Length: 123
Image 1 (cartoon, rainbow, N blue to C red):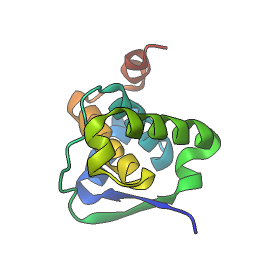
Image 2 (cartoon, rainbow, N blue to C red):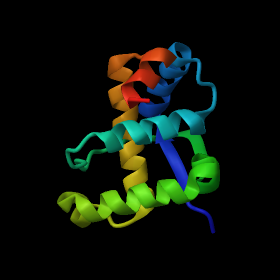
Image 3 (tube, one colour):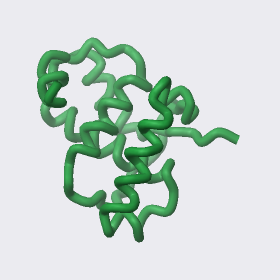
Image 4 (spheres, rainbow, N blue to C red):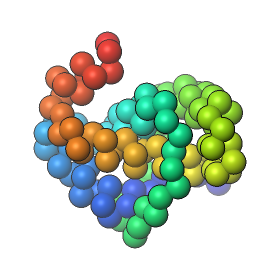
């Protein structure tokens, strides 16, 4: 059975705003950007109450797209290199969802357009 990535109601509202400012239309693409934004942050994830889940959900395969082995590797590395993430989060999907929500929140606060979003990645 495939893992399911779910986005909270608050995350959905923030992503709707991000879709407007970035012009990124696909939930999975925006979620990957959010994951990458959070993974850039060297601080450990804090366990937070995500809240009620929205109707946005995607399979692991849809979320990762053609980057499944890369996403798996990034999450595995992160889970094994940050002490609190080793102890507080017990599986890849939980870590991924927490990172996505932290990334959504970070991007929502910044309100980037697509140009600023790409510049922020350092590409």
